[in-house]
Length: 445
Image 1 (tube, one colour):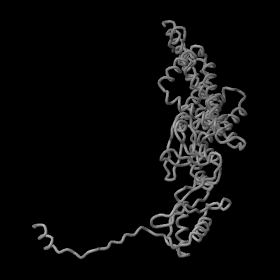
Image 2 (tube, rainbow, N blue to C red; image 1 turned 60 degrees about the vertical axis):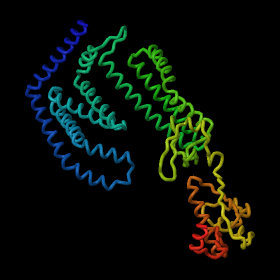
Image 3 (tube, rainbow, N blue to C red; image 1 turned 120 degrees about the horizontal axis):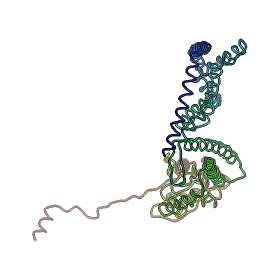
Image 4 (cartoon, rainbow, N blue to C red; image 1 turned 45 degrees about the vertical axis):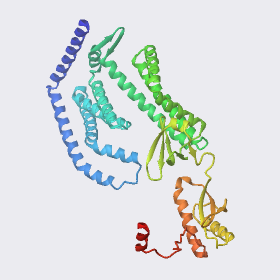
């Protein structure tokens, strides 16, 4: 530990000596002139950005029909306009200084500032590839620090100092530099994996030859493989021994198997659902009191959206072990039944014909599979009928189509003089009213 502390102090002293030397060089007349030029360029870039930025935003407001990535790129340019202008101007100054004097010292600071500015601009646009705002900020600042150290030529000294701060666990040594490398490499690999997964998933979703459930399964497997490979490759590159990690992951897996049985059951059930294609995105299902169409199939649950806009997250295990009605499993044809009754005085042949014609005229009711109407019995007050018809879009709702058919029957029965009876009761008094006095007298006797 003392040896590591001594080495760390030595690295810090070397770094401080280098910083002092560079600061002393700034006091040279040729360097002071370059500093003045850089200050003037920065002021000019600030002035240009202050004038051009509002005008550019006004111009961007008229580009609402452009693709999203173009608008984001223009917005990034607008926000970093001062740095972009500074980069262009400082490179122009470097070219002029090198043309005016062949000595590299006359343009050293200008070239250093130009290299830094160009590297920072590259980092800004590279960081836009990260979607998460917090992770994007971490990546941007981390890359800024790294490229600054590289351009200034002190990356090795800083790396040595960070590597000197370490913790030892038996034979395993973990330093701050190793942690930083792990974070950077894993972040880069995860970004690459995300782009590859997103591009491949888009191609899989556009492939009509693959069933919807197999598309979802292929996308999930691809994401697991890519992110898993990125994780283990990153650890291997950093130098982590994967043998010990394998033993640790096995122990963790056994613990998770006992503690997260429901989670594992839902994961396995989700894979089974995707493989046997019993439920797929777009299907209309009913499970208990829940009726709706399947939006997405996740690793743990299925998203079912009902007609009233509610989204139910049903565990995959319930879809495997429970009774599920899939209205569009093998085909989209759905038969609906409604019942009604008419008076005994109405001709049943006419009633059946009028009911079929009324149902056939309703939108969404199929005419290729014409409705049918049958007598189901003679009730106490009416002749009872059942009307059956077919639809192919259960996702459009069932209650509304039944209501439309009932309205069509009502209008048709009114037009043809067919009545819909309802139970009536008639009360008759069979003897005269008994006077209260007679009743009281009989009670006393």
